[in-house]
Length: 251
Image 1 (cartoon, rainbow, N blue to C red):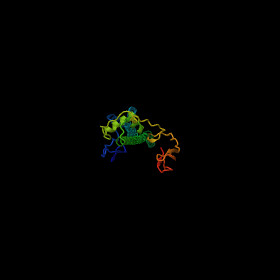
Image 2 (image 1 turned 30 degrees about the vertical axis):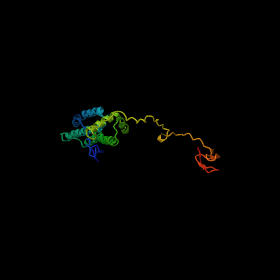
Image 3 (image 1 turned 180 degrees about the horizontal axis):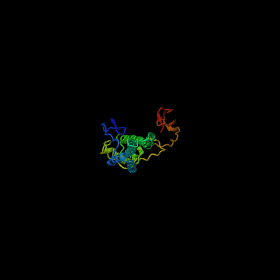
Image 4 (image 1 turned 90 degrees about the vertical axis):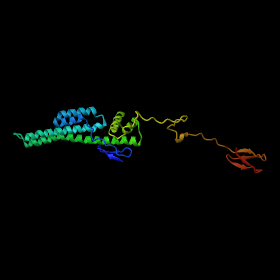
């Protein structure tokens, strides 16, 4: 059986036992620092989130995290703007209601709409990551695939991506950490010695596509060993001598 992991997909268990679920986000200390700065000072948090994205977005398992960072940065920017508005409302000067509504609409369009888009992108990236993890598990556990090149070809990933993904799955116990993988693709099985390689135009079983027809055999005259008379015998048949009844074979 398998379990539904936090990436939103079903990961088959290893040897009949549920595997450990992958984390929803694998955040580092730097990621948490970026989120904190994003809620305190949005422009700096946005710059740091973009730098983090440019440096790590080539990793499949980092894509949901990077989109999530941008989501938090934009939500943090919206909360900061709402804080300024609240302070303005309770200040001595106050704030015009028309201006308040205008600012709310403006900040929602500029900050909440991108935040919503990044939240959807993070969810889609988590789903794709889950599907890819399920593919790896199926190919490795059920298909017994142990070559990086074969896994890359069947999942549509580069060999570098496959190496990183396998280390990630082994780190969280989805794949056995003792599994060994080989670089490149599994070589094609060689034909046995002495056996000619089959041609794409040859039929199965190694039989030639065209066989030379056997020459046609004609009736011939056979001398009877009993009486010495000549008798005509058809191909692949036998007959009795016309004179003494001795059985004559075509030979």
